[in-house]
Image 1 (cartoon, helix red, strand yellow):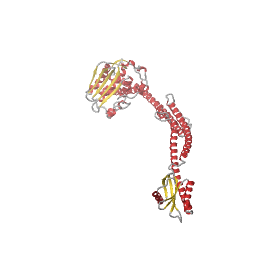
Image 2: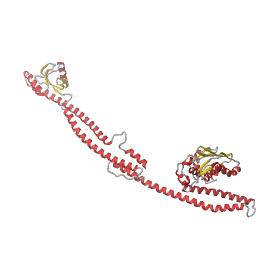
Image 3: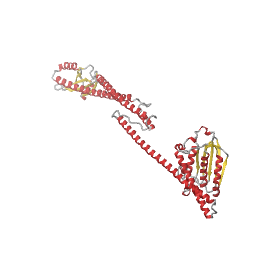
Image 4: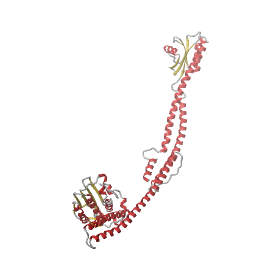
Length: 508
C-alpha cells in the first residue's frame, strides 16, 4: 500500500521538477490567449475600418460628381470655373472638369492628372487612383445637355491607414488590458484554489504513505465538487476497497494459519499414536526372530522379517512426518557443536552398504575429516536422506559420498548413476509430499525426505544444490559452515526452526 501511495503522490505532486507551477501557468495561458484574441480583434477592426473608409470615399466621390454635374449643366460655361473651385474648397476633394478628349478645362486640384491619365479615368468612370491626396477614390460623371461632351471628375481621399485606426487600436488595447487583467486575476484565484486542493490531497496521501501510518490509510476530506473533488472521491473509494481487501486477506490468512496448525497438530498426534503400537509390533517381531520361544520355520522367519521390514519402513515415515510437523510449528531447535562430518558420513555409508551390496551397487566414501558447526544428529539425518535416496533409486553403477573442507565451509557431495531428474522437476523434489519419476518409484516414500533436508540445511545457514540430467544420474551438493565461519552467527539452538520456513527459496 505504501509503495502504491508513493507512486500516486508522485503522479499528483504539483512541484515536480521540470514543470511550470500550476498557479502561474493558468494566468499565463489566459493572458496569452487573451493577447492573441486582442490582436486578432484589432486586426479585424482595422481591416473593416479600411473597407468602410473606402466605401465612404467612393460614395462621397460619386455623390459629389453627380451633384456637381447637375449644377454645372444648369450653369453657364463662364461660371463653370467658379463653381468647380468653390466645390473643391468646400468639400476638401479634388475636382476637375474635362472634355471627352481628355483635355483639362477647369482644375480644382493641386496636382491634376495628365491628359492621358484623365482619358483613362473617363473610360473607367470610377475606381481607385493616386493623386496629390495620396490614395483616392474617383468618379467621372458626364454633364447633361448642352454640355454632354464635358465630364466632372472628383477625387476623395481614401488613405491606406484610416484616420481612426490609431484611436481604435488604443481603445481596443485599453479595454483588452482591463478585461485581461480581470480574467488573469480570476484565473489566478481559481488556480490557487485548485492548487491548494491538489496540495492538500497530495499531503494527505503522502502522510498515508508514511511508514508510521495505518496500512490501509484513511479517507481524505472532500473540499470541492470539481475535478479534484471527483479525484478525491475516487481515491477514497480506492482506500476503502483496499481496506476491505486487506481485511479479507487477513481473515483468509488467519484461517489458513489455523488450518495449518490444526494439520500439524493432527499429524503430530496421529504419528505419536501410531508409534506406540508400532514399537510393540517391532519389539515382538525382534523377540520372535531371536527364537526365545523356540526355533522358527523358514516360512515363519520370512514372514517375521517382512513384518519387521515393513514396520521399520513405517517407523521411518512416521519420523519424517514428526520432523516436518516440528519444523513447521517452530518446535525443532539445533544443538550445535563442532561435528566431524566425515565420521558421520562414514556411519551413514556403513548403514546403507548392505542394501547397496544387495543391488550390486558400489557405495564408497571419499574425502577427509572436516568439522562443521552443526547439530550432529541433524547432519546424520541430512546425509542419511541423501544417501538413502541415492541407493533407493540407483539400480546399477555407484553412489559416491565425498566430504571436503573448502574455505569456511564443509562440503558434502552425493553423486549417483541413477535415472536422473528432469530440469523441470528439479525444484519440485524439494517440495513437501512431492515425488518425481515413474509411479513405482514414487510409491516408495512420502516425498518428505528432501523437503526436510533442505529445511535442516537452511537452519544451519547452509545451502543445497542439485545438478542432474535424465539418464545421467544426480549430484546433490550441501555446504555447512565451519566453526570459524559460524562465530558471528546467531546460535540456532535459541532460534525456532519455523523462522526458516519464511526465508526465500534457494537454488535447487
